[in-house]
Image (cartoon, rainbow, N blue to C red; front, side):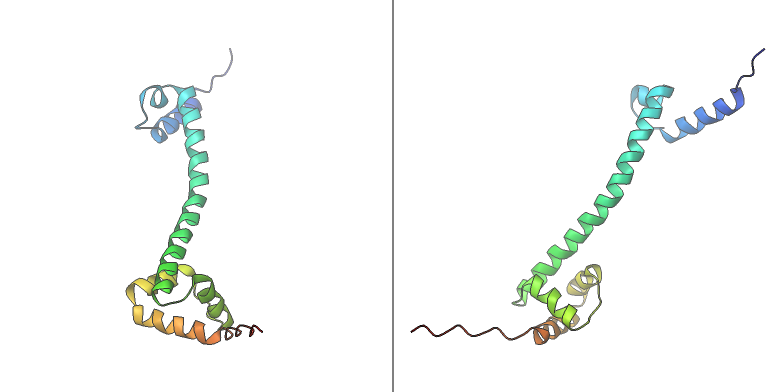
Length: 126
């Protein structure tokens, strides 16, 4: 008589159905559909964890751009000035400062402006 994997198979199915609980129709009832659903869900979860980081960074940059423009400076100039001043704050903390501590952000903008080289004067046309 052949050996059957009843105990292990039952545990595996139970674990699978616990993870796909709440899915619609066969996705939460049939083993093959549930397995495919779970694999796909995990692939999306992996991809979207990285996408979330990307979209948060874009949000912080948008906030910083708005805050810099309100103070008469471009975002790229601001970041360049901070790099020259050796200020190592990331964009997340800079955007939080712009929202919650505008007076501190004003000082950072001033610091960045002081670090930038003065714009070259336009050549005189003859």
